[in-house]
Length: 291
Image 1: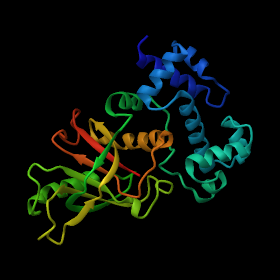
Image 2: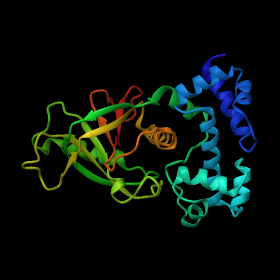
Image 3: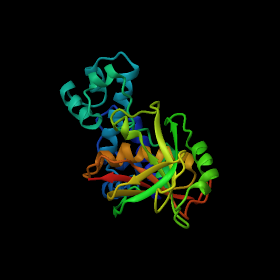
Image 4: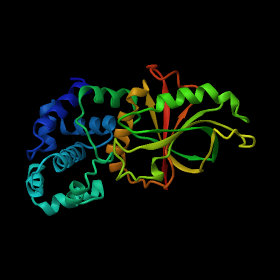
């Protein structure tokens, strides 16, 4: 049996028994793999352990019930496989940085921890289009000049922003020859990862690398990307799937890594590997700031 089919069967078994006390051994048996081979492939390809996936999916389902049902917290806790409301609250707060009651009261529905079921489309994306383990790099500061636009995660207007920016880049002085393009997310100015959700309006700057801001026309924004450590993920294929890559970063990697985030903006880098918005072989690097 090939690993792709085995992962499909493992995930299907988990989802069909999400409210039951299942073990990794049972998942491996359902997938037709040994415990060793399943856990190795699951972690290598999907970026987390089988146990971590089960726990995060249970908490994500519980988070949805907190928002969209009147069930008591203890009922949701027991359905999610926890022995008590206290144990559920501790696990929930570790992921969402809010108690179940506060999460429900404030209707947070945050981006972090919004872990969707791995359907075949998302599984294909993770196995072929995302580096699930990032490179850690040291970056020197970079000057960027461009246009600022507003968007939400649900109503993504970034393509229109880039179309406007690309049409007027020739007006920017001191551009780096064959320089890179940058998409700088400014969501952290008004929000945190624990308040960000798909309806939050935030700003992004679409720009190009420059050597100086001298003489920059007033309609353009000057940004300096600070030096420091960054985790770099590579997204491959159409940018329509870029939100799914970010879902992986914040719903899986961020919740399992020992790295700590720095209070800086994350950004995308578009270089010669970017072949167009819908090109299946395009590559874009995503930089996440680290302490």
